[in-house]
Structures are given as C-alpha cells and as structure tokens.
Amino acid sequence: MPNEIEEQTGPKASTSAPKRRIRVGIVGCGEVTQIMHWPSLFQLSDRFEVTSLCDVSPVILEQLGKFWNVASLTTDHRELVTSDGVDAVLVASPNAFHAEVTLDAVAAGKHVLVEKPMCIARREAEQIIAAQKNRNVVVQVGYMRRYAPAFLDGCEVVKAMPIIKFARVRDFLGLNSLIVNPTSRVIRDEQLAESVKNDAKLRDEALVDEALDGKPSPDLREAYAVMLGLSSHDLSAMRELLGTPKKVLFAAQRGGGRYLAAAFDYGPFVCQFETGIDRIARFDAHLEVYGSQKVVRIQFDTPYVRNSPIRLFVTEDNGRGGVTSLNSNPAWGDPFVAEWKAFYENITQNRAPKTGPSDFVFDLELFAEMARLMQRP
Image 1 (cartoon, one colour):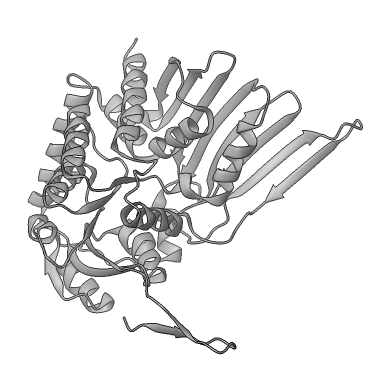
Image 2: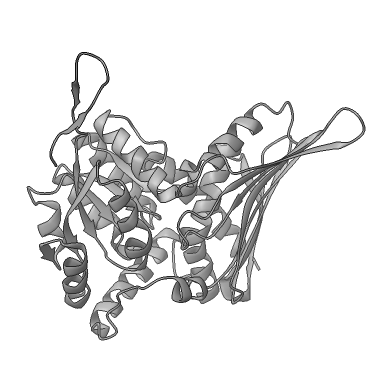
C-alpha cells in the first residue's frame, strides 16, 4: 500500500507512515467467514490483508478466491499456517477442528483469532495454553460481544453500582437460516462428500464424550453443543460483567437439549440464565443487572445483519419519586470489526487479549458443571 501524504496548511508538510498490515490466512470459509469476518477485514484494509484461504470444499475456495481476489487457496490447513505469506490465522472451521488448527498455527509462530468455542474438551484448552506460552503469540477467542461499546459502557455502569440484588442472562433466537437466507448471499457446496461431513461428526462426538466423561444422552449432547455455540457468548459476557460465579446452583435442559436454564451463585445475589432456539425470526438476547435503585440492561441484536445496534438501557430512581431512563447506542459499528481492531492492537502492542485461552477455560468449567447437573434424573 503506498504511503499516504497528509497536506498541512503550515510551512511544513509531514508524511504519515501507513499502519503495519497483518497478513491473514482464513481456515474455514463458511457462513460466519463470508457474512461477518470478510466484510470486517475489508473494512479494516489499512490493518489487514487476506492472503490465503483454506476450506475442505474446492468449490467454495474457487469461487471465494475469485470474488475476493485471493490467489493462495488450499484444502490443507497445514499448508496455510506454515506459509511465509501469513502472519495471523482466522480459525473458523467446524468446532471439532478448532484446537488442531489453532495448535498447528501457534506451532508455526502465527497469531490466531479462533472462533468460539476455542475447543471442546479441557485437554485441548490446556494444550493451547501451553503452546501459546511457549511461542509467545496472540491467541484470541472470538467473543465479539465483549468488544461492543454498549457492553463496555455497561460494564462500567455495573462496576459503579453499590449493590447488586439480582441478574439475568437471556438468549432466545430463531434458527440462523431464518435471518441469513433473506439477508445474505452465502456460497455453499451442496455436493460436499458425505465422508467429509461424517469425519467431522465423528470427531465432534468423540470430543464431547471426552468432555462429558462418557457417552451422554442425545439430549445432553445437544445441550452441550448449545453451550459451546450460543451460550459461550452469553456466559463469557456474564463473567466480564459480574465476575465468575461461585458455583452453579441449578441447571436443566429440555426440548431435546435446545432449551436450557441455570442459576449461578454470586453470593449476595443469583444470576438466572435462560436460552432457547426456535423457529421465530428474531433475536432476543440481553444481560440485565438489578440494584436497589438502578437496572442496567445490555441488549444484543443478531450478528448476521452487520452493524445492528447493541444498546445499553439504564433505568434508575430520579430521587424525586420518578424514574429516569437512558437508551444508548454509544457508537455505530459492528462488534466483529471491534474484535478485529482489538486483535490488531494485541498483536502490534504485544498485549494479551482479555478473551484469551485461559479466559475460555472458565466457560468450559461452567459448561461441565452445568452438564453434570443436567445428568441428574
């Protein structure tokens, strides 16, 4: 990229050096990559350049390579992570492969932004933590909600509250396809070999068996998948907002594992958790904290429509027998862009991300405890 020259009205003109551009290789070119990550990287083209793509589907690779003007295409992630033309790797492959790709990328000295969940089993998390420390690269988990301005502002408001009486985490939404299909064009490979799909399914099942210490029921297996996929966003944000709970008081799953409820013990207060996946085309996700004279609510919208506002609501006693309400959209922008900006700063400033591998372990521990309670008759 050529240097940009800034004109000044004074006697001297100065040149502004361009930002260092991080060369990104993408492993996994499916829905999330196409709808969220690629537009975010394109928006941040002063910081990032996509130089290589990897996917199990040659059909997807060929089309995206042409559309995105990326020449380096491979179906083998090891070829991508060892490329001299790649500085950082986005891991957006199926969940069962996240740990393997992350470990290979770290071993090759590459920085990693790995989509949640970072991994499925605790053993994998410990391997990633050890590998990251050995290579001293950035490994950041893709919890984009925790980088949204409304969430950060909400954390500051909650931190200043003298007492918390109750909290709630809620996430009810329709199937992703209900929002994705009418709003986005996604390149898919309808002819992908069944053997490839089966290999991914078997690997996923084996890792869930390991994580849950045995052969879970189909409903519990589905519930754990919901925790890893959807609930990881909710509980990770809960931990930053409120801290890590002392224990799980209660957890249950119903509806074939797609409807979950839990209660977390925070000592002076309880945080109630509830989630479900249905067929209504809407997205109802929020964190809510209740004090004696103030209620703070952080409202999330679907990530599949970029730049949808994430809002902060504050309702409080006005000291005159009435109520004051704040409805805030602190800044326009997309949380995926915000997390990529943070990733860039973490790399260039050699800074540990707040959503790093050790942070993710707390979520795995909560999931394991919830799953144990769900196994009870």
